[in-house]
Amino acid sequence: METDQHKIPVIHFNEENLNPGTDSWVLACKQVRFAMEEYGCFEIVCDNFNTELHNSIFGTVKDLFDLPVETKRQKTTNRPGTLGYVAESPGNPRYETTGIDNPETLQGAEYFTNIMWPQGNHTFRETVHSFSKRLVEISEMVIRMMAESYGVERVFDSLRESAFYALRFFKYRTRRSNETDVGLVAHSDTTFLSILHQHQVEGLQIKTKDGQWIDVKPSPSSFVVLAGYILMAWSNDRVVACEHRVTIKEEKTRYSVGLFSHTKGLIHVPEEMVDEEHPLGYKPIDSLGFHAFRLSEEGLKSACPIKAYCGINYD
Ligand SMILES: O=C(O)CCC(=O)C(=O)O
Ligand SMILES: [Fe+2]
Image (cartoon, rainbow, N blue to C red; front, side, top):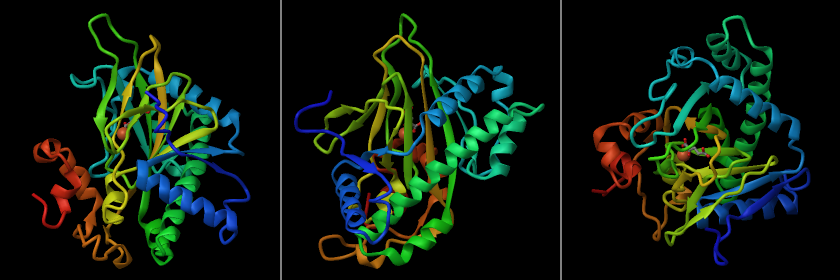
């Protein structure tokens, strides 16, 4: 429910405020930091994001999920800790997802496409590639803005170099008579950042600090940027990973897509993030190790898996 007190911050990304060093850039950095610290998320409206790309990505999503299940189930990733295809499960019976590693590279987009369509699928490959490239640019921009707003621009290059991406597609089938409106149960992501894009049918909900759930409306030109557990640790708890879920009230199939940014190697909390009020809370963070831990019995049980994995003085 959207209430008077709470509204997810909306930030417009346009040519002017994306020009580093300008006053409007500095203001946009402040808005991004405020949104992340208060909500763990914000909505970006991209003035120059074309509706055609929005329509084509969701056209390809339908083609992909319409493939036979044996085709979708094939192995598409060798990356430790990365999920490939996930079908309906008892906790999330309406949820189906699959993902592409390195989708912003031609090779990544092609590798996945050729497994799904051995005869090739030019439209799918091109759409995934151009859409992911745009989202990676947005993701890098947000990370740069966060680094600048905390005065740690010096670490931006190493964060950028250690980043890798997955594009994931989601389908939520319509409700059967004995089922609830749950699309995906509440959780926070194991990412640094997740950027979600919804199509027509709403469902994404974000939990506020005071425990209220607020709806995020779909729009062809807007994306929701969510803080994941790795950003939470990197920021030494200045930003808290955004808890979210999917609740589908309409009797319709829902599609969404998201770019998930991960990091390889060890990420250190920058020393500038540590002060009296924020004592160092994390050992160096191994994002891939954390991903595997999160899926373990202990990780699934933990109230705050990132702290259980690499928190200092946490039990
Ligand atoms: O479908 C969505 O909008 C959200 C998906 C999601 O949160 C996830 O898979 O982690
Ligand atoms: Fe999520």
